[in-house]
Image 1 (cartoon, rainbow, N blue to C red):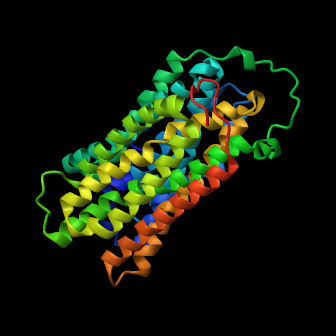
Image 2: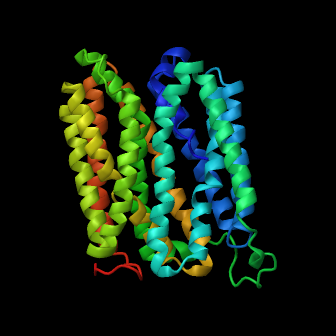
Length: 391
């Protein structure tokens, strides 16, 4: 279902030229996906505390189909592309954390961490394949074909979920609730869950910035160093970036179970800061060095992805798990919204010196990640029931 989610960043360099976009405009089209998600997710995911999550999920998939079709048929510049990507973002809000909520309600608490890792892995693989698929489809039939294919893939997912997942009849006549559905104050007072959620915000800021602009950065390095004929293209690199990162997310969750969740998350954030500095200072000097650094950076960014989401789900109050995941996801995608925008703004401010612009953008990512380590350690979140190591 998520295979087309990142077709836009994969095709970004060509679309900037085709539609004569500024870097800030391109960043807005990338970021609006996350902005729409932020607005929709508190409502859609919180509803799963009272409504069958399958119905919410299918509604989200339908909106995703509509968003991809709108982009393929109508988009011809900044405003139409912005609207189509916003609709796809609302669709994502109805599927991503809703799918995790389905898992969290059905698995044993000792298995929740691994279930969350498996869920994140499926999302990561489809997101990674988006880059290679977008490039292949665009080369065959242009960017319109790519977004038609994205809509078709989501339609197949809708049919599979509708037929394969039974309705949860336990929610058909829920017991009288003991709290207001959209009262998020108890969630915000859950210090442990909020620690994981704030760290997830920083994590997603960094991931979305690099995933949204990685193809464009490698394209810049290839042109500036004369390496345009290299065998490993920017889109192929970003596909590997996502696939290796997804594996790192699963392995990182296992490491968190055995060696300590808080320790693993701190190591990942520190490693991310170091990689961002190296990419900004050295990456523009050599295309192959930039590729290597991105393929190292990606797994480090992803290392704590599943651990953070599992941490929020596992330390949430069971009756407010949907609301807690909604806040977690909203904060995460707030970071995802700001990240691509921040890079675009930085590049436009330093438009006279692209190399300096990229260095400033990656340095900003490093500083944010370093601050995230401090905040997370001060808040000291709890471990999960299935974690074998102390914190």
